[in-house]
Amino acid sequence: MLRISELYIYPVKSLGGIKLDNAVITDRGIKHDRRWMLIDSDNRFISQRECSKMALLKTHITDECLTVTNTSNNSSVNIPLAPVKKEVIQVTIWDDTCTGQLVDNDIDAWFTDALGRDIRLVYMPDSTARFTEPAYAPEGSITSFSDAYPFLLIGQSSLDDLNKRLNSQLPINRFRPNIVFTGGAPFQEDMMDSFTINNIAFNGVKLCARCVMITINQADASIGKEPTKTLASYRAKNNKIYFGQNLVHSGSGTISVGDELSVLSTHNDDRFIIPIK
Image (tube, rainbow, N blue to C red; front, side, top):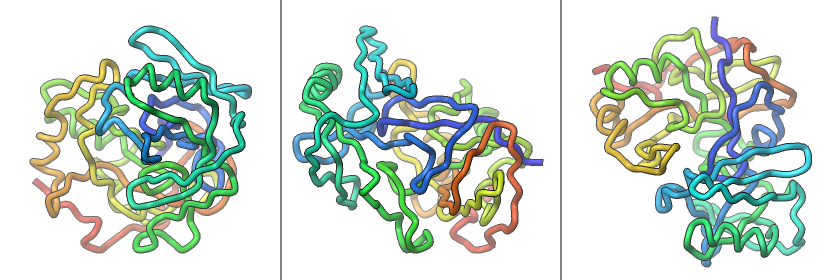
């Protein structure tokens, strides 16, 4: 039996995540997941790919506010769940352009000081509909400021398989999943087409191609060669390295640690098959 073992959100894109016991599922993913994003002077998103120090900024959320703490000096800033400013601008995430709402000048200054570059924080209002890639996902599905899809699913067995091949074991936070499950075979998530959790329907739409971020230690922002080097030896296809499955969904409600994943169908096409090594 497959069961949820861990749930995570990342309120500010590319900053530290928050572990949950229960996750509220909204139209664009888990509530609060990547609803905020840091942008540069060109209104383009920034991430740990070019600024590894973002890993040192950890998040905590309550019903009143989102708190970000810089673990390098223990300074923190409180971010209102509803932005103070009303101004909206067009922001860019990869090839997408969508509307973001500016938050607060003083908060921008805190992030600028923390990361040593000119930065502003934006929020995705409910009125913004950023659509997923139509080549892979059903028409009309939306996401937040995620890279492309509202959920990332990883099986604990997949991480266990990787860690058996490494000299030093890595935590799941290297891979920034939303949903982790136990009870399956390594990389069983690759083949999941449709499944339900607590009567909410999910579809696996695209294997997750991994970038340099998985080599960044989330505790100290240091950068190494693993796990990319090892994954390249057995999880590579068409010059990309895959780990995890991107999901879309239909329906709303709450999912919780301990909930069962009920698989309804599996993929059987080459897009989801990685050569066994």
